[in-house]
Length: 343
Image (cartoon, rainbow, N blue to C red; front, side, top):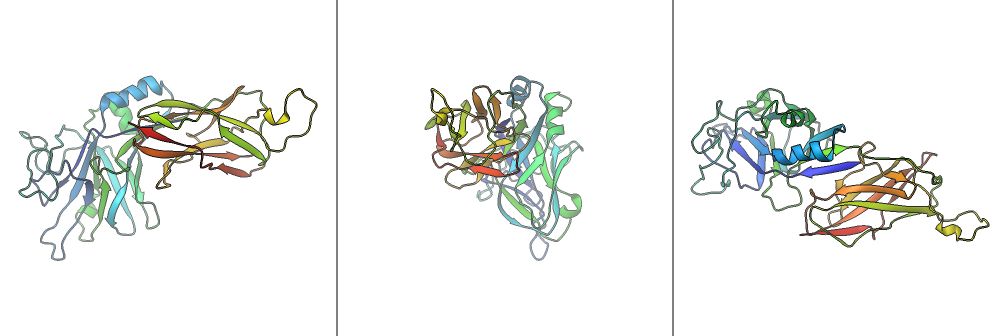
């Protein structure tokens, strides 16, 4: 299995009420229909975000190499005022735009860059509020849902890779009925300038697992599994294959010239890996029964991790989950299975 994270090359949000102001370096991306109590300052905010075409094409063409993949747009909530149910849409933008250097608190305001009216210093949007192609992806939220955006945008990314539409990024907006409503809906997400571990990302996933081994499989929970080639640090952007060595804790006695405790075994095909931020304990890459499978050959189990999308100068912990043939689930969360990503 593989997960490859791509960071934005630019992002901003645009404001209908502050129609000539640029927010290109703001720490927040706002998607809202914010109004004041008198509705005199009715506002609509939409977010724009673009990922580099060359990197997307390189991953899909040269790394994924024809395998089926999914592409998800991910943004992380900073603050919100929300109704019970709502939907956020991601449209492919039809015209190019400049990010600009403005912030919400600028006095005087910064007008150079993308705004509600203009897309560049010299050109306006064909339609105010950004011009977009009417083939959106979407994600709906209920009251109890996690409010982070994790939206399937595979169809749009496929169109960029095939050059059937230009990659001018995504426009994130609410439905027209909500934008025109007086019921406030405010979602604020961390931008690429937030200096947190939560920048927006385009997450590409595909199944690159392989399972074919003559090793005997682990069948009970009385086993140990260690990462035999774990390093303390890895340089930023590393691609690394971790190897797992599994054995029974209490092997049956047998006549042998070697210790029965050294006999390797294979974790079953229903074994998965995940990656956790060691400080916040949040899952950076969560378990996925399709896309975080652990592979196995005659040497043992292994999986590949692309570290390009991880924040440097942080510690990460590897977590392993195995579902045994009897249905029992074993999670290995060894505090020693961590590493630091360094610049």
